[in-house]
Length: 153
Ligand code: ZN
Image (cartoon, rainbow, N blue to C red):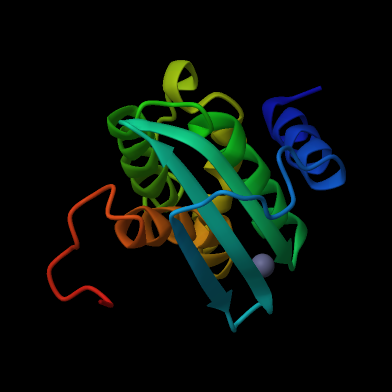
C-alpha cells in the first residue's frame, strides 16, 4: 500500500466512523459554517474549562473530506490545551494552503497528515478547512481567544 492509499484509508475510516460526532452541552461557543461550492455544512460547539478544550461537539453534512476532517479535528483538539489546539489549527491551515508542497509533521498533526494530498485541490481545501474554521470561530464566541481584527462580532 503506498502513502496515497494509506491516506485515503485514514480519510475513509474517519468518514465512516466519525469521532465525537453529535451536539452536546454544556458549551460556551457555537459556530455554523457553510461551504457553498460543495454543499458542506457544520455546526460546531466548544466547551472550555480553564485553558482546556473540555469538549468539542459537532453535526455536519457534506462530502467525505469535510466530514473526515471534522472527525480528525475532534481527535486532535478535544481535551487539548487551547494554545496547543491553536498551534495545530495553524499548522493544519498552513498545510492546506501549501498547494501540495507542504511537509506534514505527524507528531503534531497525527491523522491530519492524511489530508496532505488534498492541498493540491483548491476546491477540496475549503472542504478540509470548514470544521477548523468553525472551531476557531466557536473559540472566539466562547471568548476563549481574542476576537480577531475585523472579526464577525
Ligand atoms: Zn466538500
